[in-house]
Length: 401
Ligand code: PMP
Image (cartoon, rainbow, N blue to C red; front, side, top):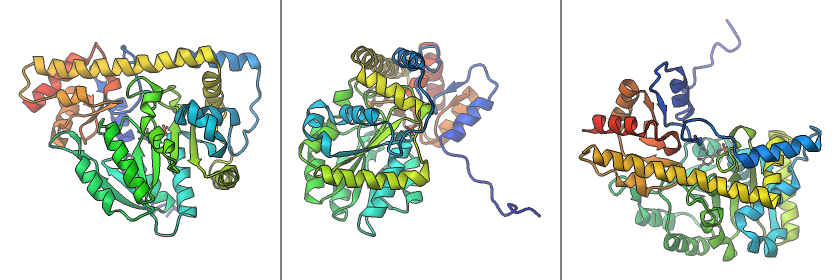
């Protein structure tokens, strides 16, 4: 007998489980297309030059390792808000945006949902796109929010089911929380057009929705951080009180540093102060004080003009390489004579492609070719490079013949 004998074995996380399987595979040909982390053309993880220089500056400053305040590093929070909402909006309304440093994008969604649970009327529901990043469901469940879904992806067109989306949200209760991926929708790689966002903006206003933008890939979609924040800015320009979650995992490559920001558009400065005070009360028992190093790095990059320029060029470089590999994979499949239309791979955007291959194909890709991807058929394009794209295309062609 032991105290924990009743504890059942939990299932592996659908994404992290595949990554563990990849690690255990001894094959020299193996390809990891499961995890959303940027890789260079040699398949290696990247520490950005802007990050290295910021770390050098941190070293030279001989800083200590004291705790940050519960709400985090203020200069980082301000810079992060400016990056998300844009300089013009920040200059005018920055004083009424409540910001809090959080544990990357996951922490932003978690703290945001905890706040919604505590301060929105009881029974308020959160609507998520179907499909979405699976962890969104775990987080909402942990925060005690009831989850509903809105249609997002149409497998027939391999694009957005916009009429389904509008139909579902039109039926949603007034005042619901609507989770949007600000850009680079994960896992589908399909974003909304400006016209579609505008329509959703009108609907949000009509129904008093609380739009919650999860922005984990700012810059990764188009290579331009301002362009990728278009939806956020469209809504805020119209005075919609959005919530914004920002992660610097992908666009600064700070994955393990857990660097992020959660912010709320408030009506005025006094409302903002109250919201921040409550965010602190929620964060204190969760993590007490957020991580220091990544916030310092992001702070220096965002607030040092030369480093900021360098970083923006590095974001573009990463986005461009991903786009190049998309086209390369789609073209190679076409040139191999695949009977299927793979053009959606080059049309989709962001880090991922929703290939359309089914779970049986996925099993075969893993067993026969040591190519690891999610059972949904999602691949991380960042895992492709000039050395493996032909091998991957041949494998996809073979299993889908
Ligand atoms: N939101 C979305 C849509 C994501 O894809 C991710 C990363 N996979 C996150 C949030 C959170 O990532 P992190 O906590 O590493 O910033």
